[in-house]
Length: 242
Length: 245
Ligand SMILES: Nc1ncnc2c1ncn2[C@@H]1O[C@H](COP(=O)(O)OP(=O)(O)O)[C@@H](O)[C@H]1O
Ligand SMILES: [Mg+2]
Image 1 (tube, chains in turn blue, cyan):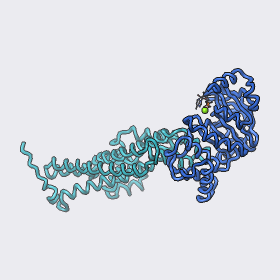
Image 2 (spheres, helix red, strand yellow):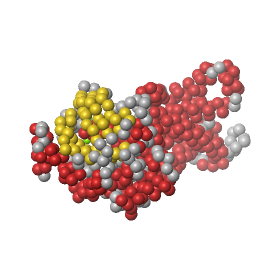
Image 3 (cartoon, protein in one colour):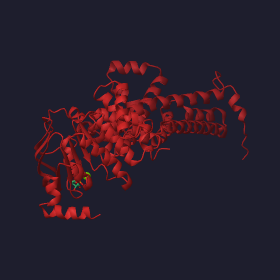
Image 4 (cartoon, protein in one colour):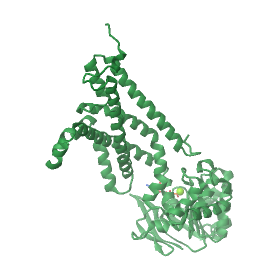
């Protein structure tokens, strides 16, 4: 489904991604973790072409992301993405947030799009909030709407960039629950997160990044039982400590 | 000194006999309003376009937009007005230039003033629009693109509606400025509010009444614009948005 092969990226002299390679098969759930600044967000944004990269290749569902001839908008419309800061559109009601891209990008009819949006809103437990605006919801609620908004596009896979790190602790679980359910239904997911409980529950593989490189890429069992690199061991010790 | 106040002067028939002095003031007032509003339409349309172009990834377009802003913002308004009014008609091809120069002189003054004020203000509007767009959270653009919107769609549906709300307060002050700046156009003979005030002084020797009337008229414009823009701001406020009201 997603193939990342020898991807490197520079900002001037700074090497953000160093020869990164991995694959995500259909139905797989991959958790990407690593210290802040290690390039996790950059890598995941390369997958849907939000960040360009200088060398290597990324293939999503048979389409090359780096190819200048690729219609990136079309590709992105099938790849859901959820951001750390939710990024709902503040000037639109929740219903409009859910419907607009279905209408403007996929060409669905307005009422069809609203129907679909409301169904998904119900699924994330927020049906009663359809008429509200993003600023009137809590962070956890906004993030669940953001997930519903991405799902409304019928994505073939979902990318998550630290979806719970901007949330107050008591709201983390409501978002993780939605993600867990999604994973169990067989969605292909690439999740940047430090929620190791979530990784343990649903991940198939865990990728550990450090200084722009993929240092570990292992089954979750192997990763948690015995991380090979010292950096990953230190990182796990720190993060599992609390 | 014994100044003779005479507020009745406005009711007197004017020196040219076809109107009262109040009629002169009213004509100037209408001219100021008409000129400023039509220039404002130009400033808003062009300013929004140029401001947006300054933020696009295309270097050539962004460069042209930057040059535009620097050009119109850095040449004094008075100089620009003289260029539009005195210099430009000479540079037109003779056929067009002659038609223009034989047209109604008031129309010539009005057109030159409108274009001049409009373009001058558009550069200032462009700067506000640009800073509004740049002050949006960076993730908004990515969120739009990630949903499959093209870049123009992302501007249209995601970035501009919020940027527009952010720039309404600074645009209010540009809107007020355009009324004030329109007084400069009296230098090419356009009989707007300030020019009518001066003319009244010349004809009636009642400078205080004249300039008090002019001042009140500008204050009236000011208060009206502020009230309307404030109402407008409230109407477009986003429920629950921090920074919104
Ligand atoms: N636009 C940019 N220009 C220069 N450096 C950047 C830019 N964006 C990110 N970086 C750098 O790239 C590195 C990786 O960033 P990021 O992918 O956001 O890391 P992570 O998500 O793992 O915390 C960081 O050191 C960051 O400072
Ligand atoms: Mg990050």
